[in-house]
Length: 309
Image 1 (cartoon, rainbow, N blue to C red):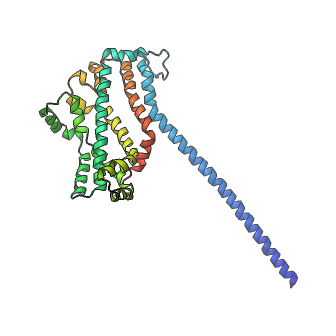
Image 2 (cartoon, rainbow, N blue to C red):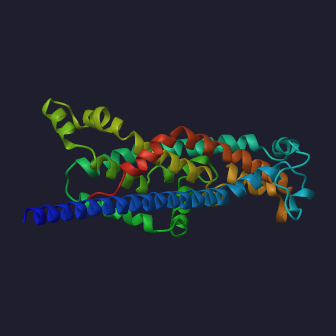
Image 3 (cartoon, rainbow, N blue to C red):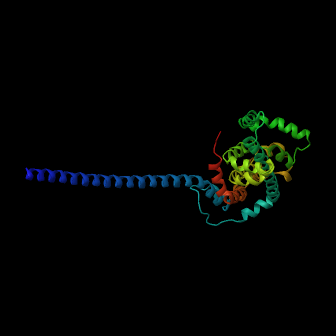
């Protein structure tokens, strides 16, 4: 009996050891396949992102390369991505053909004042809709959002008539004044303020602070990511805007860069494509600078200004 008990216990022990070893082997095999799966997924992700980056950056590289070619070389087949004899004179030709310096100054004035105005009005309106309680707040807010669904082409004629009656036609003010208020900016700033803790403002009000101090001293400094996001998006949009300047401006000395580029292209596209793309390259630089300076806050603002409530 004792011997049979020992044999039984020995068999159970051996089966336990075998089971443990088989589970360990299966877990090692599974971990190996999971690591291979993660590595494969990472490789596919890097490949797709690289392919997308190349697709996006290829037109920019072609634009810069063409701006350094002669007009005849611009249409070679296949295209030369690296110019054999770069012509930097195309960039000086931009300033000799049109008053490109005036176009830059006009664009800086228009875009700078519009972005500044939108930052002020959107932050004030967004704070009011997020933190203040007043009758009809939700109705007014949804009416403001509804204006985002109306295309600019549908309102350009009434706006032009108002601008004409105000004697602002063919002036930079005609571009600035209608754009200092932004429905999208109001929405973005409202969402940003709604995600901030209420306790800070309530504690400040208990200590005797006014709503203006609560706004400027507490919540506005916390809204820098959302403000940077609005500034970057607004700068890119109005720096490249073509439709409204085409409607409101007649004099060449008031042209912004997008409208001036059409003038540089010449009648029926008879201008030099290399000179035109040299001007486009220079017009792209401010966008890159603004995005590079605000990139950190821009990414934070996109994630911070999520939809809530």
